[in-house]
Image 1 (cartoon, rainbow, N blue to C red):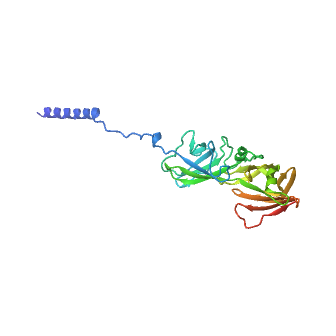
Image 2: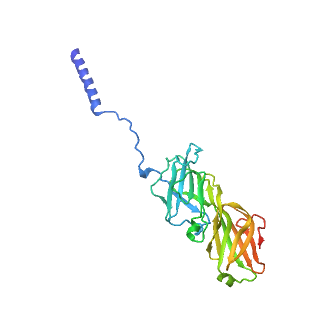
Image 3: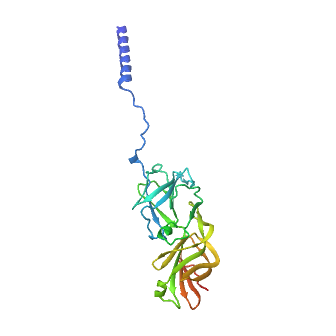
Length: 304
C-alpha cells in the first residue's frame, strides 16, 4: 500500500513538471519596440525675416536657410559646433512654409534644445564662429541686392513640441537709404529726366559672422557700392563698419559729380537715411542724415 502511494505521488510530480515545461512557460520581459515615424516628434520651424529685404518682412519662395539644433544635457545647454550637434547645417526651403528635404526629429520628448538659423544657406561651412559673407558691389539689380542680405537668428531652450518653433532672423547688414532732392538750379522734373548715378564709396564688402553670438565684422578690401533704385529711393546693404572721412557718397548728374565728404559709422540692423539736396548754385550737395534709430545728434553736413 505504501509503495502504491509513493508511486502515485511520483507520477503526479512528474506530470506537473511536464505540464509546466510545455504549456505554462512564464512570460519573459521583452525590449520595448522602437518608436515608429508617426510616434516621433518632428522638428518644424517658422523663420520670420527682418525688414531689410526687397519684400520687407517676408521670405520669398525658394529661399533657403541653414539650421543647427544643439541639445541640452539635463539643464545645461550644449555648445554650438560645426558638426556633432543634434542637427548640423540642415537646409530648410520656403514655399509658403518651411520644410527640409528629409524630416528631422527631436532627440526624445524631454530633451530641450537651442536653435540657430542663418540665411542664405551655404552647403559647406568651415566655421560657425566666422561664417564668411560678401555683399555685391553692384546692387543695382534686385537679384544682386537680395544676394547681399545676411540674416541670423536663434531661439534658445526649447522644449520638445509638436508645434512649430518660431525663429526671428535678424538682419545683420546695415542699410543705406539715399533720397535725392532738387535744390537751386534743379526742379523735380529736370532731376527726374537727368542721367543720375549714385554710389557709396570706401565700403568694405566682406564680412565674418558668429552664428552663436550674432556678431558680424567687416573684413576685406574696400569698394564703391552701386545701390538699387526703388521708386525714389536708392538702397544698399553694407556690412557694419566705420568709414573714414572721404567722399562717402557721390551723386553724378549728367556727368557732373556731387561729393559728400564725411566719415560715418554704419551699424548692424539699422537703416541710415541720407537726404541729398542737389544745388547748382552752391556747386555742391547739401546733405542731412537721420539714422533709423535717432542717436540724439545732428549728422548733417555740406559737400563741396
